[in-house]
Image (tube, rainbow, N blue to C red; front, side):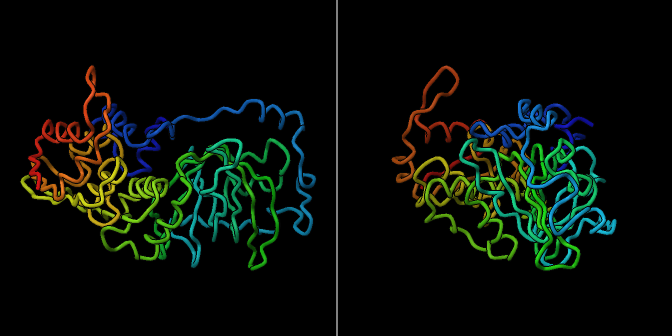
Length: 349
């Protein structure tokens, strides 16, 4: 199974329905605005530094003050259940082997905070962590190349321990480990990793989903522009969890798009996502992704009817000109053209 196929399967797709076409379709949603979730960053110079011993370690490998051999401290405990223990909000699993479960953490401070030098770089503090598998094998080797656990899926868990969504993380590397103040055989780990898709501000929307409080439409209305994009990112990565296996609405349905709060591209996608899929719903976050959603599998089946309320207001705000093949169109007109091409009857009201 290829790396891309594994990541699509983790997201909730199946390569059985469309093979290479499905993988191509998935890339329309997962690679927005230059965020290459499928592009592994090769930081060769850093790895060379580890090989040569140039990395400054907080302590000699296996000699973390107050901890000693972490593997001994953990007592070889293993837990491979897909359901988290009480209070655990995060879980990690190897990207290379789904059976290589890396453990749980109560908090992941820094996951949604890019480091100043590079947008995708993160320094994440995993509080009250129970490391296992490939992650456990690294904690005794801080400061050496063996502290690099590899690529992983960073899973966000709901109150029952079920996975709400996952982020792909490159080059998870343990750089510090300390006993947890909570005891119980847990540790606090600090890791570096690369994760472009965990956008700043997204954590608060995940918490709404986790606590069941993302429960009515329009919660994005007052958000600042940067927060709207974070909202859309969570709508995308949580879509399978939020739909809970619900099938697409059948053809012939009538949906209502509220145009009162549409002021730019992102607000249009926030509004159309909720019109089709309810509170926090996703139905594209760029033109290519919208076009793909209209092909089916994302909540609605064409042909359908879309009542666009307050459309005159939206038309004046979606007036930017955008390229469309060898043409240039006003965004509002291009959206109407996209709907029409996929069998959607838009009624402007």
